[in-house]
Length: 198
Image 1 (cartoon, helix red, strand yellow):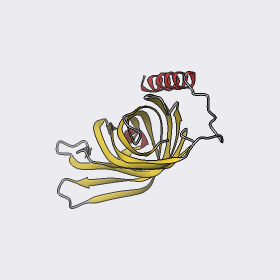
Image 2: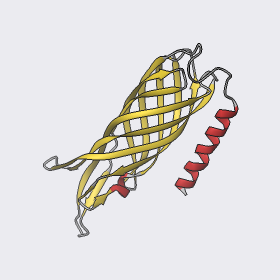
Image 3: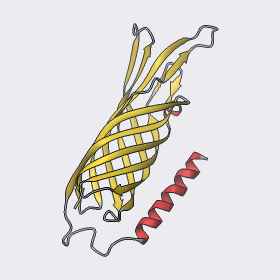
């Protein structure tokens, strides 16, 4: 159901955005380049629990329509993992942190409200820490891919706010009875962007 909803949102944003495209060219002409940077908060499930990530993103804008840059996210919520099926299972803190590159297509960027297509790919680590902080297992080299669609609002000439609906795909991880499926799920990202957009 989540995958179907993601596809519906994707096609809805793309269709609406391209129907409103302005007449100037994507490449060349009088278009300008710029930059953007800002904080983000991401909400999505981790191991069937609601998780919260905080982080930041920064990118260069090419002819208003394309953004190429990077993003970093760190788990800030108190997500848990219980080991074993005995009457007194051991409880651990579960953290997923990742960083990587992001490519974004911005559809009709001069409109007050516009849409975007986002693609993130990078690497990260999974930390499993016991509640007494006497044990920590760190798995480095986890791959994270996150395609998504977004909607943004131009607040001023230098400030934007937005929402991104995405699906986090984790691979190359298996430890303590957990695997990629436990860390992969839909997410919603709330963010602000400060920069030179025009």
